[in-house]
Image (cartoon, rainbow, N blue to C red; front, side):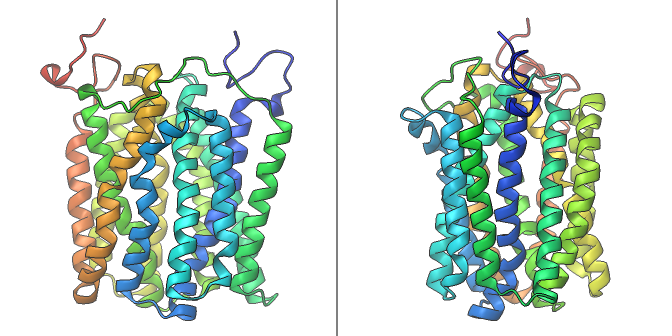
Length: 404
């Protein structure tokens, strides 16, 4: 039987599972990138958010991520491929509706709808990627998927820049257009692609294994540290340095261009040098960036840090391929759901608590992010150069399954 990532000899190249994964990622980014580009300006200018409200809103956004483990129960009733597409459609609907409810409660509600779809989609997409892509090719193909998704973001940010600056498009129009385009792509994916078979049947129950502890720890710290960038770095640009919608779009264009070029390169580097070295490089870089955020006073320097910060995102592929190498293939779907929940334990709490800290000392928020990156660095050094079942860490006594 042919691998679903490549398909059978009779199947045209554009109908392979790897292409479907790429197109789903593009649809997600068209909608989510628009929402993310407009969010801080929409919240501050149209609704009057402060650090307190943005912290609450971001915690609401992360609640569905905390509940991502429930995806495994839904998979008792729906195929994982269909589940990913339905989730993507729900996210698109939530984003399309955002501009029509310019109130605190309205943004909270549309954020929740968007986030339910987003986090279930991300859970299913990551699981399908690890199931469908062979281990030898996964880093490279994931890098290309991230690169193409970044190309889509580049187009989105360019359109927002032109639409806002020269065409007079408003928040409602941009949110609606993004959601509808994503919905149309979902409809086409349903009609154009077959239902791909799973090479290994997945467990339909929660999986929490002792031997995955390092992956869980890296995932938890990633969720905690990532919130500093996602919530507060962008907020810093708007609140402290006064960046407008088109200027934020300009920053995102630069970010997407970097990701489009370097994500495939990072995939190649992971395949060549291994997860341990790439994760180490990522966390060392983030320690320096977060520390610099704490003391930045120049808007151009802040913008440079923002771009550099985003450039490290694609290195997170290394954490996914590390898990793929140490996992029982039947554990991938349930463990992905559990991992998303672990990732969001801190993510639900940090935006609210740090939103209050922000009111007193924005620098303290970013210094805490540097400390989180340092903990992640220490954990990354426990990853073996050649991880596998039985070689989950560099400490033999911490590996609960004997190597074969």
